[in-house]
Length: 528
Image 1 (cartoon, rainbow, N blue to C red):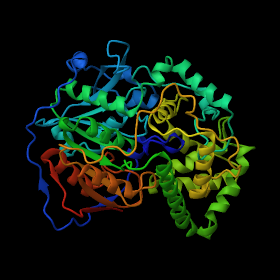
Image 2 (cartoon, helix red, strand yellow; image 1 turned 45 degrees about the vertical axis):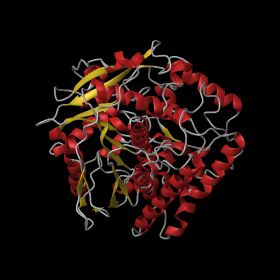
Image 3 (cartoon, rainbow, N blue to C red; image 1 turned 135 degrees about the vertical axis):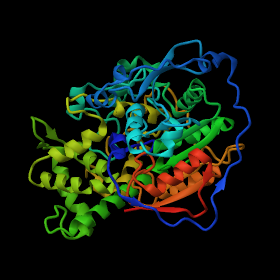
Image 4 (cartoon, rainbow, N blue to C red; image 1 turned 120 degrees about the vertical axis):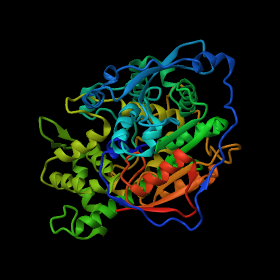
C-alpha cells in the first residue's frame, strides 16, 4: 500500500487482485550475477529475548483468524495453516505484556529452501489475506514451489492482538473516521485531536498499545518470526510500506538477511513532508493521465479538455461537502468518501474506467460506484464489517512519521493542495492540525534510514515508472542506499511482484529468490 502515509487508508490487497497484462522488456547487456552462498551465522538475540526466539509455532486451521466475510471465504480448506507468535509488547521490557501476532503459512509445493515472509504494505495491510491472494497469483511460480509462503498481521493489525481500534462499523459507514485533514475536507481543534487519540486508546487496550506499533518494533518481530519459522536467514518480499519495513530490518539485522525484494519502494532519504509532496504530485499526474484517456470518449464526465479536468472534478465534488449524494441502500457518498474512491482507483490504471463511471454517477446525483471503490479498498466487506486497516494505518504512522505543529501542518496541507489540486476541497487550511499531536509516545523512526549498510547481501528493488503512490525515483534511491539491484518496470500502476501479473517480473524475481541471481544492470520489464 502505498507509503507510510497512505492516502485515504487504501488497502493494498485489492491491488493484488486487479488483472494487468504484462510482457517482458529488454534486459541490459551485462549478465546476471549470482551471489556467493551465505555461510555466516545469524546474530544471536539478547538473552532476555531468547524465550521468544526459541518458541515453536503450532500451526492449525485458519478459520478462527478470519475477521471479515472476505477472510472467512479465503481461509477455508487445508491449503493454509495459521498460528500465533508471541512477542514482547515493549522490547525494552520483555518480561512485561506480550502481543500475539497472527501468522499464515502455505507450505512449499516442492523441495523447500525456506520461508518467504511477505508484507502487503499500508501500513496496516492484512498480511494473512494478502498471502492468500499471492498464493493464487503465484501458484505456478518457482517461488511458491521452493518456499513456504508466509503472511503475518503485524502488531496492531488484523487478527493480531492487541489490535488498534478507533471506530465502530457504524461510524465508519457514516465516514466519522477521519484521522487526517491532509487531502480531505474538515477542520479540527486541539480538543478534537486529543479526543481522537483517547478514543483509539480506549478501544485498543490502552496507550501502551498505541505506543507499541512502530516499524522498528515490527522489524524486531520479523526477526523473532524468522527464528520461529526455523530459518537461519530471512527471505523477504515487501511492497509499498513493506519496503520500509524490510529496509529497517536490513538496517537492524543485516547479518540475518538471505534475500529481500522491495516492490514500490518508499524513499528512505525523504522525510514526511518531502515524501508526501512527491506522492501527491504522483497522484495528480495519474489523475491527469486518466482524464486524458477519458477525454477521448465523447461522454467523458470530465469533459473533452484534459487541461480543465481538475476544475471540472472540483466543481462536481466540492458540493458533496455540504450535501452528500445518495449511494444506494440508504447510504450516502460524502466528499471525503468520493475522493477516497477516486484515489483508490488511481493505484492501477485498469481501474480508471470504474473511476470515470463513478464520476459520471456523481454528475447524475448518485454515488454508488465511488463509495464501493472507497470502501472495498479500505476494508469493508459485503456484510458491513470493517477490518482495522484505517486505524492501524493511523497508529503506525503516528509512531513513524515526523510530528508537525499546527502551523507546519497547515503549511503542508497548503503545499499538498497545490501539488494535487484535484484533492483540494477549496476550504483553505484554517483549523488544520496533526492528528498525531497528542499521541502517547514519540516517533521511533528517523530519516534518512537504511543507508550504506555493512554486510548486507544483494537486494532487489522493483520500481514502476508510472507508480502514482511510490514514485519511480524512490525505488532508485532505495536500491542505491542498499547497494542492491534495480529492476525498472515501464507502466502505470502501484506494485507488481505480489500480483504476479508480469511474466518478465515473475521470472526475474523468482530467479533472485531461488538462485540468488540479481538481474543485469539496466534490466527492464514493461506492463501492457
